[in-house]
Image 1 (spheres, rainbow, N blue to C red):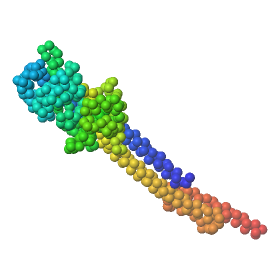
Image 2: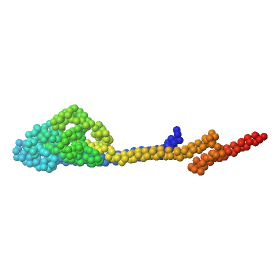
Image 3: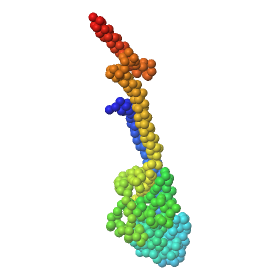
Length: 411
């Protein structure tokens, strides 16, 4: 190992290694803190949107429960053959449908599952007996459906239903509201870019099927191709049941495009037993993502908000680049300093070595030889002075030897 190698190693150990260690610890700690801050921000926004969706669903359910108690509706439900009662019921249903722009139709369904009166008269006569919202409400429980395709409009919609009871408390009919998904989609789409560039939200039902995605913002005409993508394969029996309920419209279960997200599936399965929200990490198009899933109260759905991790760790990433540049500059300067220091020290020493070699080999007259004791740094001057003193001693002994030899010749 040459001398300048040793100098370089010393400079690197003393100057560069501490920078590397401090930068690594600092950047890692900063990245962790920024990630935690980002997850907290995402969690707050996810919970807020989930609560807004919950409030909307409860409000629409409360509306249909009130409709079921209207005198015009209960009177008609107990006597479906009364034409005057039907006219009054239609007027009440039309008034209820006018309450909100996303209401498409409000109707009374008889015991056979046929729409007997509706705010849109063309809906009347349609059989909905296979619908879960009719079966559940006729069993006595108000119900919020999963989004499914309407057999009338052939568009995805939510259905809210409630039993209509007679004077004895028996279920005489069912009222239901068909509501388009615009309001829910508005809430989900509002989270596009909400907590950072690239932030996106989506609503997933209990079967892992996407029922609303923020990517529909400005692209509602492409909604059919963006929603109904399961995050995991669906059990065939469950898929058949969902298809029978017209969840996917004309699509069959085997036509569903599975867009796998196993990390979310694991988080959702965990939330079924405990907790209301959970953070998880996954990769999308090669980018590290952080997401938070929040479970709704009104339905066993989960709202997910995710954002690329770099949105929050960009400062740490910049610090990493800066640290790398600092280390590179430190290495370059260490190399330069090693060369400069080596040359400033070794160069003069090599000059002294050359002169000493000339003296030792007799290439220069001992009386004329000398070492420069005036220039160079302190160490070089001290070494030169030591060599000069050695030359003085050599001259003394050489002259003494010459005198002795001359004396011997004269005798």
